[in-house]
Image (tube, rainbow, N blue to C red; front, side, top):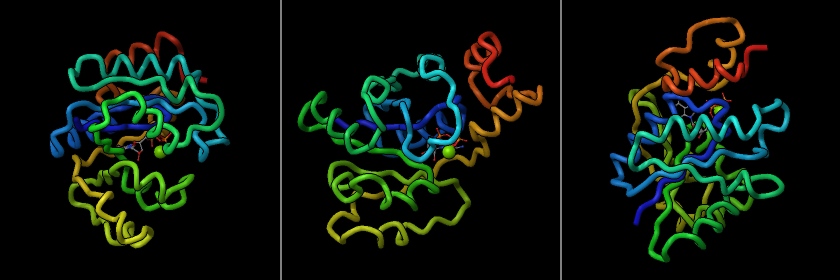
Length: 200
Ligand code: ATP
Ligand code: MG
């Protein structure tokens, strides 16, 4: 069984996340992808996040129509900072022993993977998929160089459609009364409007 992991603050989840997840799902023939909203990302202490209940609700709304997409509350339910290594350990306890995990990352995040908490242990426990935009140059060797030789085959590269979308940009558009149509799934936009998220 091959299980993708899509972690993020999902504040809000957007079509860039979804298109990336689907491209990896398709390229690697995964059985399912788990979307895991983060509780307190160690690298995002500064900004106030939307309530985790809202981030979870939007993640469910965005993924519910895809048969392979699932949402896990594993990081929201855990106390303290969400470290990927703890998440992978917890998932290994839940899934059958033959399950292989593929943790999906944007190229930006892949270049910093070696700075993550217990990075070598983490990379020994699952595969990492650096999802890069078609047409952009990505130096997989530069990422590999940060890890011991015997772990390097655990970090792979998949090209995904180029979508210039970020949650930051979406929050900014809402604040300035601009359109977010086609940047997020329609139910997510409706939810954002109804709950008046990011508009003040
Ligand atoms: P923010 O703007 O608040 O940082 P974000 O859009 O980058 O939000 P995150 O929740 O931080 O979203 O990202 C979760 C994961 O999704 C990260 O691995 C990130 O690299 C990846 N990601 C984000 N946006 C895209 C995109 N447009 N295409 C592909 N991957 C993306
Ligand atoms: Mg980001």
